[in-house]
Image (cartoon, rainbow, N blue to C red; front, side, top):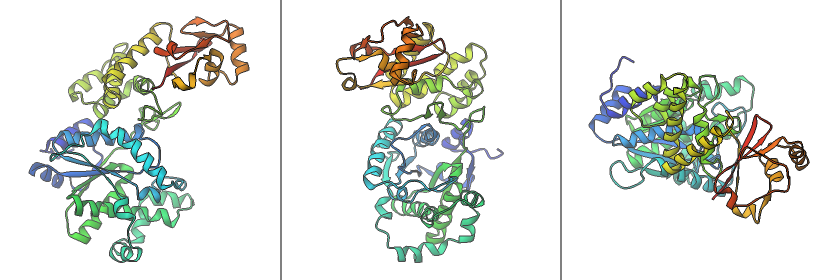
Length: 417
């Protein structure tokens, strides 16, 4: 990059690898030098939790606030009712208003970990686009907003074009999504003086639409900025593990499993992920990422601790590291362990070890679990199991229990609050 930014925010995010594209980098830089700027990132409430795929842009908002600027987390209470078609093969299932509100509540708890929603120039704000979208008059909206959109241009955007090229149906409902997202930017400029929308590279077309619409309707200069779509060094989509999505909600993925996801980072990704997902100085991230052999494992533990501490707190990170050391140093496995989280109510007066082996996925049925134990192939905390009727209580789970089936298959059982 030839342009050398003057603002702290742009210097930081460029050094860390957050920047993919910007509609006017120098213009945005000049605005940031003038004083605090308001920006937003939108989040549709399509799932019960945010996942690791969202974490890049959440960290971007965190840096935005840390450098003295004001972030808006825009919840898509309105747009979720339509569904973003970007790079999807089919239409999203439509959710009820109650489901959307519940999802937003769950997501808010995650944002509270990363952003300060207090008062002041840089205090974060959470808004819901249902506030202005739910009450739109359709004919007025078509006349005042729809006339600024060219269908020819909308069809040329890659997010739509890829769907049509595969001859996959695109409903008129979904086709409206990009207009509604553009209108969000216009409304946030009117209501909050918001000058910037940020998002992933797959949102570039939608963001540019908002910039163009606001210029046409209000003759205002606003900006768009995108982050790269991340894949791991071995080509996998960032945020996916063998068990599926890596959720940011502790009720859907335990802090230990979250910690273990980062501990299992490929060697080649350590330095890059330290810069993107932690607040360690860039030079330190580069130093740690350049380590080799056994030393790179120490860097992975630092990565796991730093990321987990931001989301779940330092105590959870320390407990996860302690558990990992106990599991792996005492004959543990060299792979990510699936975790079975049970509440005290589920355990009741006790649950048999055969049931735990089955529920943790180490056996397909209770019969198979009992046979595994009878044949000497099952262990609990590395001690051989001989009785399928051994009962485990909530008190026994004061520390996680490690179950093993054979030498290579393992799982953890933890007590969930």
